[in-house]
Length: 314
Image (tube, rainbow, N blue to C red; front, side):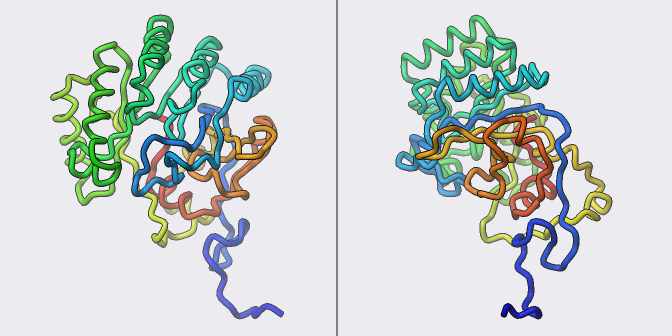
């Protein structure tokens, strides 16, 4: 028989914490952003990639146009649109259908946010031509968010590999020269204040002539680091009042992500962008069935969302 006196393990029970307190959950409010993970393959392998993207990891396979359209149809049927459609990966432009996935979303009237490292996959002539065609037709609906871990070459390349900083700046400059609405995402991995980070990025953006207002947290997102070895507290129902937090502001109140696992017959919906591999957070195959409360039973829920105050969408 199990030892009743043995201590509970944190983040092990979806209903109660290790201290026996009622675990917090987030109810669904309204759909603001639907993310599509276009696949976990990436042209680079970052040192601290939470989703383990790499040139060889295809645990999440490429989404097809049919996959995306089925969920766009659900958005229409449920009366949510137009909303923000986010594309993430891996590197989205590794997916050969990426430009078409953007187009079918834009034609429905949705805003499109693409998270990209702006490196070689995006800079292929065929992709560039496709992006310029979309920009000519839907410029006010497209936002390209570039992954720039730090505003210095040394720290960025420490995370992403030698040459990554220069390659991303080349892509940033190309997007800027062609009038794309731009934003950027960095990390709070290094010992500096938020103000210091924003000042550093401001100087970088001014150097390359990119219109990214670093003081705007929706245009320069500084993500808290998701530390696998960290030991954050569990979030209880009482924490909302203690922390003066509104659960409707947490990502899973208004966002979902579509993934397709290798070997799966069809795509499915997970609670958020951070937990694509956790079975507990895979909610349903349809969007409608996924719109239910989510229990905050993972350290990322505490580190990134509740205590970190971050969101993958603006």
